[in-house]
Image (cartoon, rainbow, N blue to C red; front, side):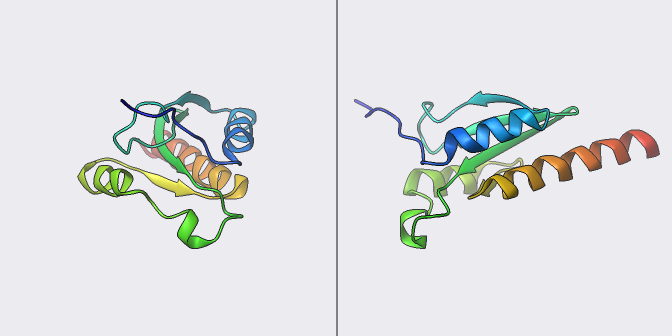
Length: 105
């Protein structure tokens, strides 16, 4: 039986920052099987995000075996973030690309 899914210490902070930036956020950390922690959507783009706690040593924020397998098999976008700044950079980068695509398309 699967143990209760845990989140990193900065999980809530990052989710709240993404929401303030205009993202919708769906929690996926309880799915298991290495599935990323959250799905964030902004301006027609979806972002699979694995959240790791940047305050921990590298060995404690490495991907688990299940996460490594999932990431390797997934044919779409997945990002690993360790800070609010990284999460916002990811969301804003996607936002800027969405605006560019709308403008050029």
